[in-house]
Length: 405
Image 1 (spheres, rainbow, N blue to C red):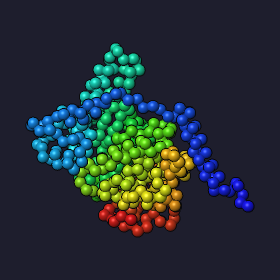
Image 2: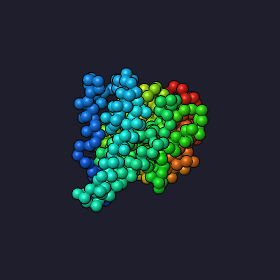
Image 3: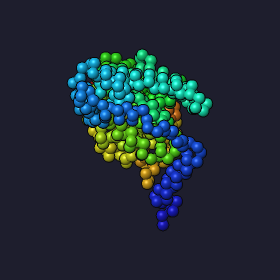
């Protein structure tokens, strides 16, 4: 008679019980926070104004039209008319996939200036509580920082806790483009940190950009720090489901379809960001050549082939990362499926030596960052596999123009 203790059914139930306990603990220890919303947002108001707007007596195209259509519209305008639209509808243009990237930078600088002035008034509004005035001051300082001359803000939404995307390098001339997709607790105010800077999207992208330039000095690269989705707040129920990932996946694919040129794009997805990339995978444009996930709780599929993408799929996890203790399964919408670094998943498993914990994958000097940079510039022969047999590099060429495996 088979021992009850070794029953596979019992093992499944133990895993499910562990998953339930994890989420009950997270939900009852105050780690789940409610994101504050502020009614109709400034972005929504700008988009509505655009929809009612006209240029030389002609209606404007729908702001959510296909990026190619919007690209043709802006290309048909004079520089003066493009500038006029950026000043009239700065938030709409600044977040419009298909608009020229330099015009988006210009529009977002205008939007940031307007938002900063509005928060300055709120700081001295006697109708606000002291806490409200302090919040206004925090927002104004953040907006002012984003307005400095060297910042290239590709997306900006001041509503709620905010969304943002920033570019390092020149998107228009880049031969390789990388997009960093971060995880939980990502918003406008956690976008950049002075303490542990490489754990925040700004520091992740800046570090990757520097590493790519070192790895391939002759290759023109650009890196996007993409915090332009509403990420889960804390490790509560939102982080355990795909709801935020599904919303983020739509936004990510819109971004990718609006990028200029046709250079290869690599996605670098950290923690819950790998859930976003997993959900987005089947809708990715063909120019996405690589999806690299780190510290992943799962990608909402049982194996890499079910992502339904032609992009190469890479995965890594440092031995000290606590994410390995989260149950890798999905039941009733809770959990994110199989472990991407497991042999059965079928990803190309990379070394993450030196990453130290859950947030250290973009730290300079780590295998993880060096591997990301190698993928980002297409130098696949330089990546270091997690195992000695070099299986992660099987059937790959070391050139940036290599065919996909």
